[in-house]
Image (cartoon, rainbow, N blue to C red):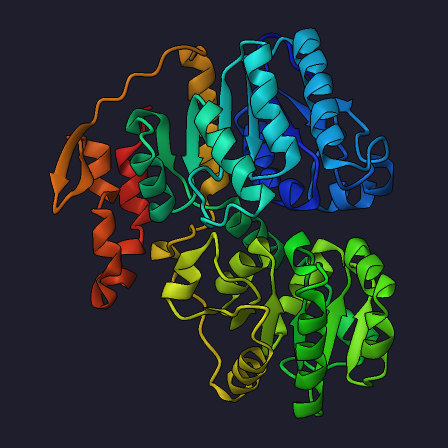
Length: 441
């Protein structure tokens, strides 16, 4: 959208970011908020992704940084991203910079904001895997630290921020925009049902498998994951396994000769990467989902799909707490196989009730857009943040206490999260009541 004065600068550059940022842009347009849309091209060249943008009703970027084809090394990518985002910010003079998630684009946006002395707003703040071997974990932690304002998708994310000493006045619980995008696709009949005939599968008669995380594509884990997949194919001959294979995953598997091994199984289908709506169509009707993706965990949960996540930790513990997701160490092949096979035998789950869903109710984009408009009006500045917390020590561990009408709506002591019989209620959110309590920043 052409900006007249002090626009919001929105920065994104990967497919997951585009999906999650789309609902925010839809609402900014509805609220007539000025913004400039900057596409880094970290994963996708814009010219190659125009259909994807059109499907999500995303505008053509005001600035396209073309970063993906310029660098191969991640450190070079971050350095060049910072430089280019700074250049755009100096030229465009935005009110503040807004970015989402945990990518190199998000990290660079946060660091660029410091160099141009512009406030930074981080969406999906407080999400933690507590696995510091993941670059994404470092990216999101740095972005949260630098941010002047944080949008948290879940109660647990809010708690993470509070326990890291972030002032509550800079946090808002809004839900995940992944829920918004997913519900939009379903309600607007954007699913691609023809994909079932394309792959010759029937609903609920296939497993959906994805893997792309760099830690799982190593010489240690990749052979184990491949062995697990082949063993599942042997044990479940009546089920097809659809495997949309990421380009980097394909490259690693071909280098190690594992692609040929998978192709020897008639019920394993290696297919090219899918569009968002094609993937959601398959996800919605999959009998079981096996993945290492954070976004897939969210989407499968909202659709009520049982998921096995090939990781030791997750950024979305709510999906595990409520029984939709099971974490499996990629090293433990036999355990992974047993869990997948047993999952087939279990009755299907129902999607969570959206009005109390811990990941959101489909209105995160509206909440974020309204908050961005308010933030642009109050003119927040980059500067000193002073915590208002009182620290109370209980059994040798610090607990946070702060009198706040807003916190009273969502707050719980972190140690309560270990009480199994109450935990499902603790993480739920009454979104209608929450909206009533956050009309003002």
